[in-house]
Length: 487
Length: 99
Image 1 (cartoon, rainbow over the protein chains, first blue to last red):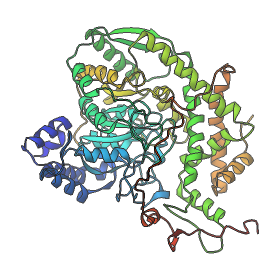
Image 2: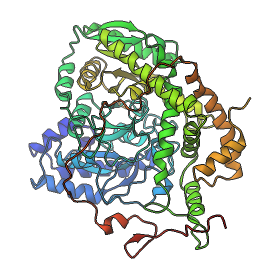
Image 3: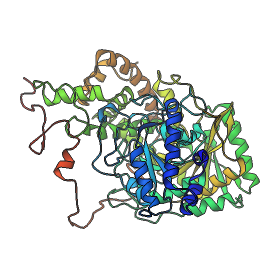
Image 4: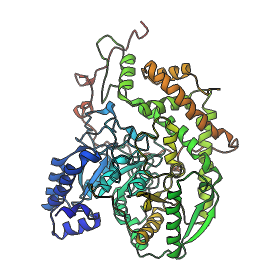
């Protein structure tokens, strides 16, 4: 029954419900696959075989029901899981077992999912390649010498390597969508406030958004519907009903986009995408036109300032959020010899516990927030954020969604962008505007460039997450899905 | 001209409670200078009369009814502490920091 690992979540849920297979068999098949390939892929930081089999047994006994009963899921290690190690891929949290669950983890359990383990990522979700994980990078199943994207490279690689049918990611500047793009999988960033941040280890609180990762658009929509919705424990959670994303995905899969207007952002055209990425994107756009969609060029003149604004806002918020790692309440403590002061121990703990990218961002954020620089940097970036939001709002008066490639380049070889941090930041050029605006966006595989996957991004207005699923499913119906060579 | 000096980076690291090494300082100073020169482009945008956006959700002051709900036990709250003593977080000495 090894092909259980190739099935979609929708198919698995159906077969488990009809008792054609047991949830334990499904869990075991995925655990076996992880044992067989994860030494090479390194998608997981922690595999909870015992917990997974116990959860699956409860499904088989009928103690747990729900729309995803018995379907395995992998969870990014930045999300608190009660009693299960949670490190955010940082040394500073090595060995920490949270005393509580994130809201989305509670909801995953209520839906009947079986958690296989915790996935690798860039430390504290800062990066675009997983090369900043303190526990070593994840390797892209399409080419083990290349990055799987980041920060959620582990979740995306687990899907592409058939280690899990579903995964959870978090998207602050593209950390769900860019890994989806470079691994040939689907990744969706919900509307900010549409999914709860309670129990998510904070990086940039005004941008962080948990969301679904899957191999098909319908699976992503189903996972989205299970985790989304108002949470009183998150004060930025939107107290409104979640759009019916599953119905929208099914509607899109029928392949009819008559009357749907796609906005092509003029300012993205000359922005240094690789030729193969541009070609795959253009072909997909033509495929959508054949399904009845109309393409309208729109202008978003402030998008070119999104990347600079983001790299002021996100580090500023991170420098404040990561102050909680002080070696007192959880995680590591370094240098406490009985003589050193609290401040000395704190500084030694933080220097030993954080990796270089995290330190760079803490220092940059401290600078941008310091008196004398605040107005020129953080304050100005917040004003630019307003202008970017207005660009989106104006565009959505003309079109239903905006479209672009997800990331300017396909999976790059390890080490090719680490010496100059700004080169790494360019991976998020097309994904960042959405985070500043707060709307939803999805990356759907749309083709290959030199044998490596290319992602197609669809951006929608806030709380209109259903639109991106409709267009995404239509694209999938036209171009199909993409599988990596056998591992 | 450099946007940020090695001395400024050392000062910021101290403010951030990061006991960075000399080698890290050498590395970060150059990298942060490149990053700052790139992000300083936000200053090109004429935005004097534009209100700032701190957050995309138009919600303020979200309250709930003042009803007690279950929370972590003392034992659970201390479960991840590097050091605990008599039900409390134990910390290194906090006095005579300048001594």
